[in-house]
Picture 1 (cartoon, protein in one colour):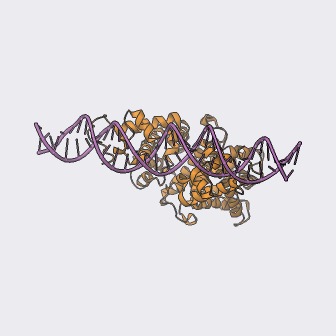
Picture 2 (cartoon, rainbow over the protein chains, first blue to last red):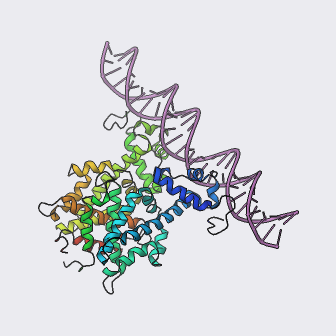
Picture 3 (tube, rainbow over the protein chains, first blue to last red):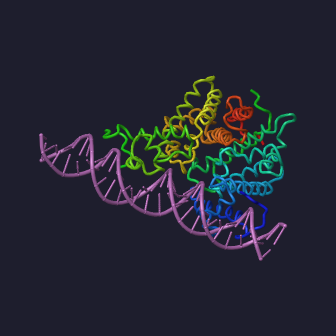
Length: 204
Length: 204
DNA sequence: CTGAAAACTTGACATTGTAAACTTTACATA
DNA sequence: TATGTAAAGTTTACAATGTCAAGTTTTCAG
């Protein structure tokens, strides 16, 4: 059976977790193209066919790594949100700064998270829990949701803006990446537009 | 020599163009993961090693396809911009609609365009020509650039917003992709936020 | 103690990217 | 026209990868 999460370990200890950890390390050190079944297995100290007992092929491993990465992403945003001024606007700006910072610090993992086809992990998140990853965005946006309107409106505006900037930034569109995100001159205008969200919706 | 663009064809006719065309067809029919040197070669009717005389390996072929795709992308946006109301706001809204529509109709090609590492093609574009791809965005944003401010400010706001929404939309974040982009309920709020761009920059 | 199932290994195979050696074609030039 | 050279394309070979099948080891319930 694939993916036995809570069964007692037999040989290795906890190979499933070890493979995910190895994968994240490979991503960090060598980039997305170096993430390979055989390399993960070698790094975890097992044979090349061992992962098949824990994941459904390479796509299964990538999915599991993406899930773990998404959780770290969520924690990074939570931590960032707690740093700045604790007003609704301050929290959303800090959250977005954390969004960009995480992507800059973990570009390959970020790319993996958002390149796993139809992200089924999001569909669950968006409809369900607040403790989930999307829930962090949702609760941070909540103060800007007008009475009786769909909360996804504000959420989509915020997420599109910060995600688009982050993606283009990583792609090097605004110059060679690796710049300190904090001081990139084009990040401020994005934040400024972010402050417009939640005000009266387009008078003309 | 690699990439002889304007030399007279010897055997095939114009293998370089044929390989790019084959690549785009493969992308359209079978997705990004099916884009393979050997498959492009087979589709063009040549041996698997023939592309090496025209591109620098698979990354070179991907780059060339991305460049061609980016040109089609630019033409699609130009066409879209010409359809709606010919006001500064109408043009920018039409442009963004064209942006999303192109990505929905050519998801694999769109993904390829924005996944070629540091997009050197953009760096040239952003600093140089108006006839280039980025130039279309630039000239459409121009009416919203306040006197004496960096035009890249408005451009970054617009591009981040539409690119982020498009990317998240393709990833299925807003529900299963393949929906008519025209009627997706979450696209309107993005357009609404777009209308806020270029007004007085954040009173508080 | 025993047997079955899970965990892991070994070996094999098709696909892919890449490099080298070779053949064919085009074309400038003597 | 004949010829030599370089580009264009083919063939062969090899390493890396994902996947599968069969076998081996370990765990553990009974």
